[in-house]
Length: 495
Ligand SMILES: Nc1ncnc2c1ncn2[C@@H]1O[C@H](COP(=O)(O)OP(=O)(O)OP(=O)(O)O)[C@@H](O)[C@H]1O
Ligand SMILES: [Mg+2]
Image (cartoon, rainbow, N blue to C red; front, side):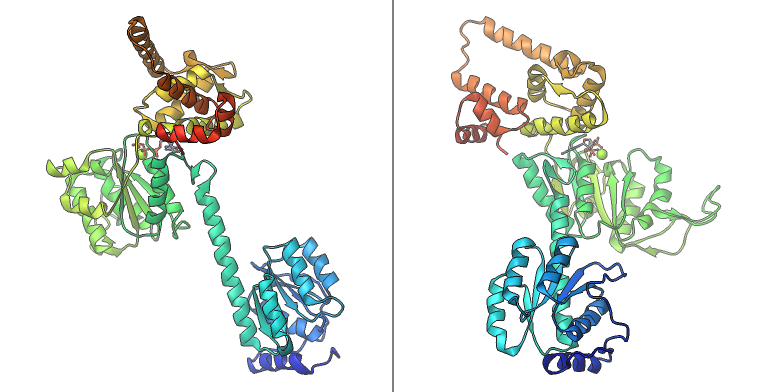
């Protein structure tokens, strides 16, 4: 047994532990100082106290709370551990011999500012504990303390660290360099969309996602699911447009054994598979009127009835739906149920077509190029002529068309720089038409292009060629960066 003094605060701690029914006394086998715990716990705690009984009592409490703990009996020892291992929290005695605890705190905060420090202090040093808080300590606990007090402080620490790491993770996941999650784009239209997605992610209402083909409806649906609190649950996309109509019902709601020929055993539907998560009804406008009624009932009653079954089965699923059809028109012509439309349309998200956010084009091109270049030996890039054309083009097939265009150009072009001639026919035809128009304009001597327009073309071109690097664009154009930003704003191309 240890022989350390049990007078004063330590006794109080031990008494407190005993009162809680815990074994406050150290084990007969002394534990080597700074020995690592074998359990794999989430948070790593370092206890720094010169009193062995104190260290061990705190260690008992911390272990019971799931901390992975290490102990140190001096500041030197503490720093050697801090320098060599991952530590999230330090429980630090303010009255360490030789080295004032406040100095230790200051040094920890200098070297590892992310570490939370909880100070242990005697009554007489409350004042210095307050000073310590100003130096960046997370909390302090006054000796003598009991099990409950220590537990509460450590639980607060755990909650704090969990929250900050969740927030950080979420921010990292959501705010990528080029946009939001896997969505690329910094145009004001896309920034607005990201804000709505972030809000929608934390609600459980159905969302109707509208947008032309290829604008990213499925990507947006995924972003809503994966940035919300149920991202660990399933995300199940269902293409209502491509499934055989007679199969959709059994696919969505499942079936019981013997429901139809070939139904040799019961099968869960996609709604049940998505339990706790999200079902994404893509091309929802294609559902037959009969199925619309069944879907409406499932949403209203929060239950489904498998094909051939008599018993309803409760479901808890978030519904997201998308369409590129004019559902309002479908409602007025009677091909889409009004009540279902209102159920699905609690929140509406409209994704703007690419031609309305042309400033995202260089970023999107860069994004696709990066993916391709990472997988191939040839490092492709676009020549000025090709880039200019891609910026002028209206992209009726939106981002999907742009992706295909870049992919095809990279496949067909054997050289590293891609020019107009390497672009797909649709774009080349567009280029020919555009050239014809310019030639027509230039051939009429009375048409004079204003300098302002020439300047606009030069600026947009530079930003596109330099893949959105505005500082470099300003430098190369020979204008100030503030001027460039202002002009881009005037052109509606800032971001
Ligand atoms: N903002 C974006 N950033 C990066 N990639 C995008 C973006 N928008 C769309 N894409 C890509 O474009 C392609 C089409 O996107 P998606 O399938 O989500 O579009 P959609 O609106 O569902 O199209 P459709 O109506 O034809 O089903 C996908 O490969 C997707 O990754
Ligand atoms: Mg789609």
